[in-house]
Image (cartoon, rainbow, N blue to C red; front, side, top):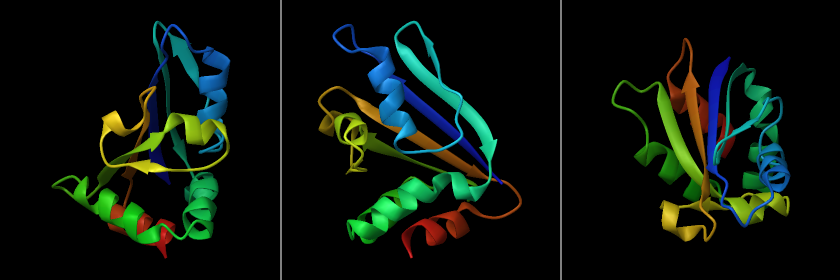
Length: 129
């Protein structure tokens, strides 16, 4: 099991349902909530909920980039990592990682992954190999 968190700002010019669709294109099984100017979700899921992300990473041959960014963002205790995904690309069904929040013109989707019972490095290995 992994705890997955998603957070994404919804700008006034955006349709919240489209932002929700973008997140659902990335991760299965999340119950998304739109409150104020944010779309958020937090859930304990099986690692299979990240299968869409894994398939995209492998098909686009960007495993090394995802791996590097997730390792750079790994917590000191080794149980958490996070990354930014391009919101517009996610809406179109493609997963594009951002090195920093400014790379996504409408703001990124921040995905946080916390592993339970094992180091997050095993999740990173599963996603990127």
